[in-house]
Length: 216
Ligand SMILES: CCCCCCCC/C=C\CCCCCCCC(=O)OC[C@H](COP(=O)(O)O[C@@H]1[C@H](O)[C@H](OP(=O)(O)O)[C@@H](O)[C@H](O)[C@H]1O)OC(=O)CCCCCCC/C=C\CCCCCCCC
Ligand SMILES: Nc1ccn([C@@H]2O[C@H](COP(=O)(O)O)[C@@H](O)[C@H]2O)c(=O)n1
Ligand SMILES: [Mg+2]
Ligand SMILES: [Mg+2]
Image 1 (tube, protein in one colour):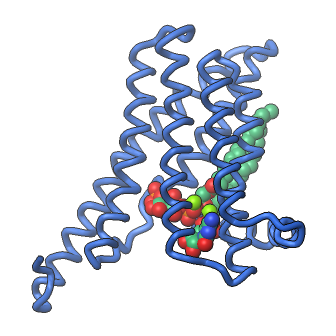
Image 2 (cartoon, rainbow, N blue to C red; image 1 turned 90 degrees about the vertical axis):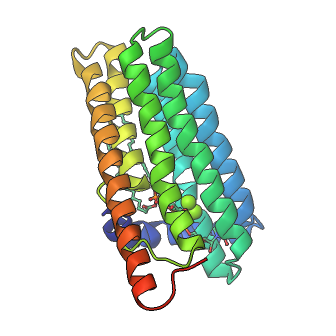
């Protein structure tokens, strides 16, 4: 949903910044790499210590690079299969780091094995959700369904909840509950999304066979 409706808005807002980076000689690949490194560092340095406010600030500062790199490539007319591969592959790295950082907190100082397991489930199910589409596309199918919880929803819900939960460390009472609630929502939503995508691909594969294709 966010991918469909918010992308156009962020493209307009980020286009001047993307043009500026191109003018000073920065390449889309550099933005992809630095953005991912920033998200990974923010998630794996701050979250395992329970520093959710500062971790979210650092991650948010870098995560928008994922919208800037493609914008730059399109403006420069340099969109490429390599760029698409690099972008998607490093998205998986960044997503893993966010949920691994949360899982490490609950495995250590947060001392809650159930929430550690839910965070690990979010990590794994998010990867499966993305894989279903990538594998379907590699087989010539479209996986033509948005799904309940795509990457943008996973990131926005998790980061808003983590950032607000981090305010508990500044004395705001009860707000730390937002993170467990968000993790449960993402876990259930990702499971539903994976099922939506699998059923869609099953239907598309059956249609391809009925049309005389769909064999390997
Ligand atoms: C006092 C409070 C402290 C709070 C501190 C700060 C809070 C900050 C909160 C949130 C910031 C969240 C920002 C999240 C931005 C996410 C942007 C992003 O990277 O989106 C990526 C997404 C997809 O990009 P791609 O096409 O490159 O990726 C594809 C995708 O990954 C596919 O995976 P799948 O979806 O299938 O799982 C892959 O299949 C494919 O390979 C891959 O290429 O881009 C978009 O979707 C574009 C839309 C982005 C919309 C961002 C909306 C941000 C909205 C609000 C943020 C502000 C909230 C403020 C909260 C304040 C709280 C107090
Ligand atoms: N280093 C890069 C990154 C991206 N691309 C191209 O942009 C598309 C992704 O666009 P986003 O708005 O989602 O970032 C991607 O499929 C590539 O075509 C690129 O060329 N180089
Ligand atoms: Mg991108
Ligand atoms: Mg991306």
